[in-house]
Amino acid sequence: MNPLGRSARMALGVAGLLLIALISMVSNRRALISGASSLPWGAGAVMDVAVPVQKTMAVPVDVVRDAWRDYVDLLDVRQENASLREQVWHLEEDNLQLREALVASGRLERIADMRDDFEIPMLPAELVGGGVSPWFRSVMFDRGHGDGVRAGMPVISEQGLVGLVTAASRRASQTMLLLDRQSAVDGTIQRSRARGMVRGRGGDELAFEFVARGGDVQVGDVVITSGLGGVYPKGLRVGEITRVSDPGSRLLQTATLAPAVDFGRLEQVFVMLRRGPTMELLYSGAGPDAEPTNTESGLAATRGAAAAEPTP
Amino acid sequence: MKPAVALLGVGMFAILLQGVLASLIPAALTPDLSFLLVVALGTRLRSTGTGLLLASGLGYLADLFSGSLLGLHALLRVLAFGAARLCSRQLNLRGALPQAVFVGFLTLVNALGVAALTAFFSPEAGFGVPPLGTLLLHAFVNAIFGPLVAGGCEVILAFAGEDDRGRHLLRLEARSYRS
Image (tube, rainbow over all chains, first blue to last red; front, side, top):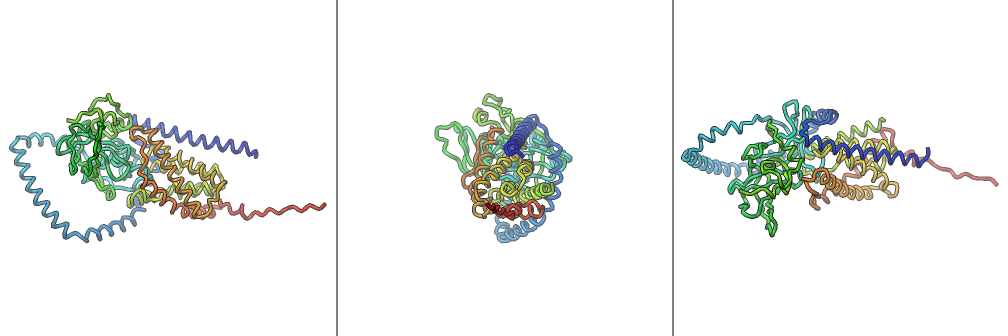
C-alpha cells in the first residue's frame, strides 16, 4: 500500500470525525435553543439501557455508603437530637408569631388563594449516576419522557433547588445542577429582597451577582428563587451567603453562596412537571437590552442582562 | 471487529462505573476512565482507524453521560487518541512513569480544550477553567490510574487477539552474502 495514500486517508478520516463532532455540537445546541426535549434515538436508547445497569452497579456502592453514613450519624445523634428539639421549639414559637402577624394584616386569606399557583405536580425521581466529566456538573435520574419529564423542567429536593432537566430519554433524564458553569438562576435575598443572579462556578459553591449600588447583601442571608419569569415558583431555597466580596469600582458585586442542597448526598429529587422557557433563555443569551422579564428566572441570562436589571 | 466491540463494551462499562463513582466521591477525585482508555488505545491498539472510531464512540458516550453538548468529548477524544498515537511513536510511553506523566499532561490539555469548546459553543458560560488545584488534583488522579487502565487495556487486547506482541517477536535475520 502506498504510505502517502494511507496517511492521507487517515488524515481524511480524522478530519471527518472531527467535522462530524462539530456538526453534532452545532445541531445539539440548535436543538436545545429550539426547545427539543428528547435525545436523538440512538442516544436515548443508550441512556435507557444504562439506567438498569447503572442501578445494579450502584447497589454495592449504596450499601457501603449507607452503612458508613449510619455509623457517622450515630456518633453524634444524641447531641443533634437535643439541638433539633430546641430548634423545633424556637420555630414553633416563631411560626405562631408569624401566623398572628399574618392574620392581623389580613394576608392569610390572600395567601390561601395563591396556594393554587404553587401546586405544581411533582414526580419523584431517583439518582442513578453522577456526570462522568468533572468539568460539567450534572446527574442522571431514572425518569424520562415516558413519565412526562421534558427538558426545561426544574428539579428540586426537600432542601431546595437542584437544577434543571437538560435532556430526557424514555426512561432517564439528565439534569444540569446549579453548580454547573452554564447554570444561572434569578434569585432574591429573602431578608432585603435584593435581586441578583445565582451562577454556578463548576465547584461546590455558587456565586450571587448583584448590582453593588443599593444591593443589601450580608453574610448569612438566605437566597431564594425570585419566581419571576414563570420557570420556578417563588421562594425555593437556593442557598446561603457565606462571603461578600469588595466591589471596588465595579458595577456588579459578587457574593459566595453555599447551596442549600447537599449535592454530595443527593439521592431522591422531585421533577416539577411544568416546563418554563428556561432552555430558550439558557441558550439564546438575552442581551443587555433585553426586557427584565426575559431574564428574571431562567438559567443563564447573560452578564449584561444581569447588569441591566435594576435592583428593587 | 471483535476487539473493537469488546473495547466499546469495556468503555461503556467504564463510563457507567465512573457515573456511579461520581455520585459517591468528588468529581476531581474520580478518574476519567473513558479518557484513560482512549489514551491507552492510542499507545497500544494496532489499527489506527479502529482506534479513532472507538475514541469517537467513547467520546459520544461520555457526552451523553456528562451533560455536555453532544460531540464535545467526541472531538476531544479523537484528538487525545491522535496525540497519544503520535507521541507513542516518538517517545517511550510503555513504562508506568512515562505513561503517568503523559496522561497527567494530556488531562490538563483536555481540560483546556473542554473550557475552550464550552466557551465557544455556550458563550453564556464564559471561558471557565477549573481552579488550578482541582485541575492538578484531577490530573494526578488520572496519572495514577493511567498505567492501570493501560495494563487492563493490554490484557483485553491480548484476549481479543489484537495485542502487538507479535511485532516484538519478529526477528529480522541479517542476510549473509557470499562473495
